[in-house]
Image 1 (tube, protein in one colour):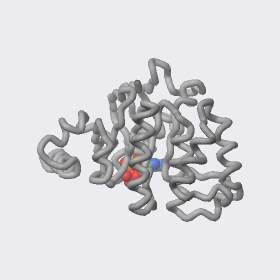
Image 2 (cartoon, protein in one colour):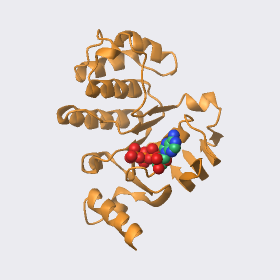
Image 3 (tube, helix red, strand yellow):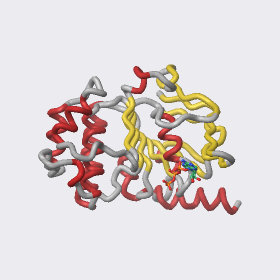
Length: 234
Ligand SMILES: Nc1ncnc2c1ncn2[C@@H]1O[C@H](COP(=O)(O)OP(=O)(O)OP(=O)(O)O)[C@@H](O)[C@H]1O
């Protein structure tokens, strides 16, 4: 379980997150939704200890995340800006990554790569944008981290592989029962895999609940738009 208490993050004068209280339960798939600049990446990076808060705490199973290597080994965070070394063969990259995560499963990574037609003899700098994202997803899944944080995980991936991604993600979750947090603007696409939803707007949590609670009589996308309109226009 991730517990976030009174979390704030300021970039100079700008408050990217303000007094956030949130709980993410184990074994669930969360959608973290919010418009551009809402604070999603900032929140995800702080949970993964890739960015430091101005105030507040984040704990995993009661243990603070901050400067806690044991806790961090259980968290895998993929963001848009993550870059691998430029001139490394993918098969060697997988071996390199496996050193950082105790449960990293090399055979599973190879199996996933095959599913996505990702050629492991290629080098990182020869990958297209979509395949670069697929590589990150493969590494994230193969880490078998208890907590998987995916910021825009389908960026640049075509619709065929996006469908495969959602399928693989659900199979993975059923098998390993991990906690997954996904942030994406493709709400219609992600809706079928979500169990819980958190909506953030201008650094504040404005709604959270199960998918059924939030999108009771309409699609999640429609519910999301209505909630945002309600907050912004009263
Ligand atoms: N390094 C930084 N320096 C200054 N301001 C920043 C920095 N990173 C983010 N911000 C600001 O903090 C706010 C939250 O940004 P964040 O990237 O967390 O939003 P987001 O919800 O992930 O947005 P998007 O959906 O557009 O990726 C924005 O106003 C952004 O401009």
